[in-house]
Image 1 (cartoon, rainbow over the protein chains, first blue to last red):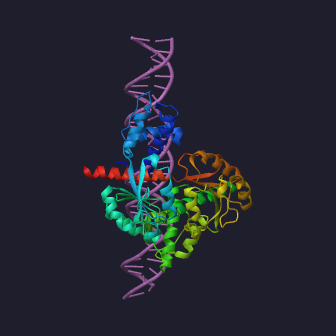
Image 2: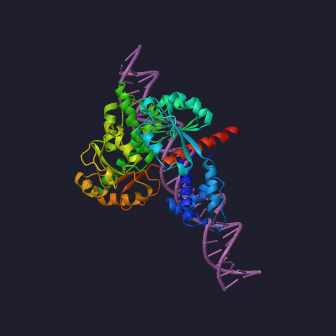
Image 3: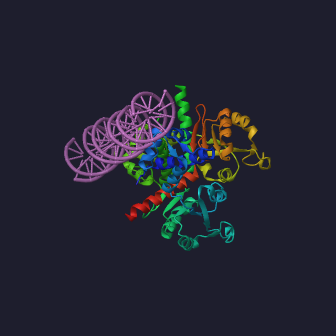
Length: 210
Length: 210
DNA sequence: CCTGTTTTGTGAAATAAGTAACAAAAAACT
DNA sequence: AGTTTTTTGTTACTTATTTCACAAAACAGG
């Protein structure tokens, strides 16, 4: 099993680039087309593919269709992935309304919150009480959850998701969650990302003066 | 200049952990307290600090107050950083309403959009036409921008920000932007993050069977 | 004031990730 | 049919990052 996160992210990027290239009429691509498209070296592309046993044709490059298919298989996108969201605040709301997921084969099946004024059992994406999570997740065999609740509630929501049988979590709460068992947790922390930008801007300014 | 992104992210995490520890009454900390708090090894903590010339006291650990101060200086947080947002869709809206930035010393000074129905010149965070960005950014000497516009507009907004003199950008549009000049671009791509979680969940399931 | 313990700071070792280089295969051209 | 060109796939190399290990400093207790 390859555990290099940036490598997996590159696979996703290759896939996205391939969709664009296919829309432009490409039937086959070479490693340097893909490299250009996502901003890496051709040897990196070939190395990544070789790691996952993807092979092309010497002098013939890669068939776009079959490559997309292989990448989708690796990335677990053969069928639509159902996802639940916990927390219908600013971020939860934005995610729920965001149209980009659908075309990526991601379906938000339900949101869960504690605030009863938010419940709407019959809307397109139902908003349900947190207590119903277990039932819902088990019935639909959902494996992926998003944590978009306030900091204070994040750990207990993760524990709840773990208990429900959720296997992977994308966490937006800006703190380190303790995962028990074999659940995968990825963190997205917007403050940290901004701080990072700020650091590099400042650092660059300092070097330019000297 | 240290250009290791994950190292900078760790500094931010140390800083956040230190605020929590201080709130709990800690006056000094040891490398293994911080290591525990953010989930790394104590030697990593000391190495990171050593890279930035942060030193503590043998057997005495680090003074919480002075450590926070040093980290804030490195991360460019001595004074509030002003940020603008381009695009008042789902994500832009969520960021604008998000309360977490304020306590991190980040101030959203204005939003810019093309949709005139969204303009509100006099609200707390003004929403202005995109054309006014240059004037605003130059007057307020703003260095950091967030791109939360649809894919199709993202590159032109980046170009606009570059022309305004913005030095660092956090980009939410799911495509690779071509940066010209010495502007720093960090990407946040929620689909990619979710795909990543899905990959690891699937990969783990496969290994467990065997 | 000496001995034992704790904890830092750093240089060396180990691991991981990315880049380069090139043989081998395949197509194209003559 | 042979020669040249192109492009893959993989091995070797380089660079970056993390982890280890231990000397040196600082405090504590007797």
